[in-house]
Length: 132
Image 1 (cartoon, rainbow, N blue to C red):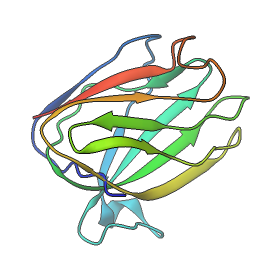
Image 2: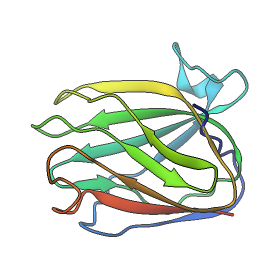
Image 3: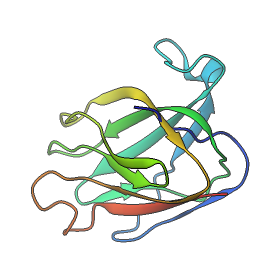
Image 4: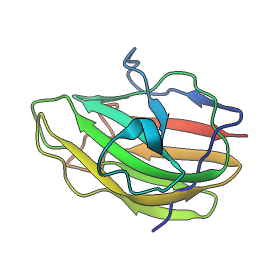
């Protein structure tokens, strides 16, 4: 699956529990070993009970490797749904670990991000990202 979102202007709109942990967007060169997007970027999302940490960032349509960092004490995953992305899902990420996932394609629009494990979404593990 492909998740595109390059650098331009998008605002992350947080819903559910707020977190000050930033959503990191970096170029593949800065991403280091294992970056799956030659010339692309890595999108890092931080998760813990029961929220997904995002902050305002500038992004635009492009190709991203998604890195899910589980800072919690429970297993989590990341789901993305929006324009051109029907229901992208990361593998389950064990507590205290990071999973660098395949690419996903984002284009202009609003995307929902959430954890689908148990009732985590109902407990606040959801957010939105607006790509402009």
